[in-house]
Amino acid sequence: MNIKNLLISLSLSSVIVSGTASSETFPTQTSLPNNLVNPAQVSYLSGEDANKVRETVQRVYLAEDARNYDAFRHLLTKDYQQQHSIYGRLEGVETFINWLKSNPQAFDRYRHMALNTVTSAVGQGKAQAVSYLLVLDLHPAKESDARDLPRILAHGVVRDQLVKKDDRWLITHRIYDQFAVAAAVVADREVRIKASRYLVSE
Image 1 (cartoon, one colour):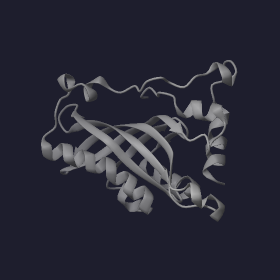
Image 2 (spheres, rainbow, N blue to C red):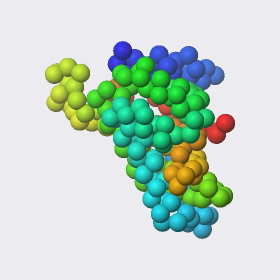
Image 3 (cartoon, one colour):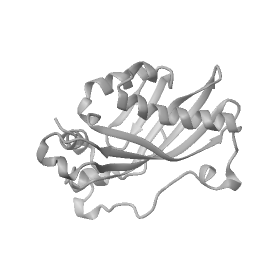
C-alpha cells in the first residue's frame, strides 16, 4: 500500500459527514498558541534548555527516518500520547513504535524536517514547543516518477508538551494538524480537508 492509499484508508471512515465535500473549506490562516508566538506572552526557558527541547523535537524525525526505534524510548515518555489529523490517536511509546514498524509505507522514501521551532516554559520542569513539519518525497517507487522528485509531500503544524527528566527533555504529548497534503499524491479533497483541521488537545 502506498502513502496515498494509506491516507485514504485511514481517513475516509472519520471524515466530517455533515454536508457534501464541496461545503467544507480549507483554513485560510494558521492557528498557533499565542504564548509561543507573541514574545510578550512567552515564558522563556534557559538557553541550554531551549536548545535541548529543540533537539528533542528534531531527533524524533531523525529517528523516524533512520528507523532507530530504540531512540524513541529516550525521546518520548512511556505514556506518550499522539493526536494526528490523519492517523488518529496513539497512546504509549511502545504503541507508537509498533505503529511505525507496521506502516513502513508511510515513511519509506520520505524525509521529515522540523522548521521554525520555538519553545516556552510551562512550569518547573515542563515546556511546550511548536514547529512546522515539512515532509519531502525523495526517491521514486518506479523510474517513471523520477523526474518529479524530490518534491514536497506535506506541510503541517506540530505542538509538543515536554517534561524534564534527568537533565533530558522528553515529549509527553504531540499534536499533528493543519496539514497541506499535495493533491498530486492525495487527490481526494475530503481527505485533504480532514488533514488540514485544527485539533483541540485532549
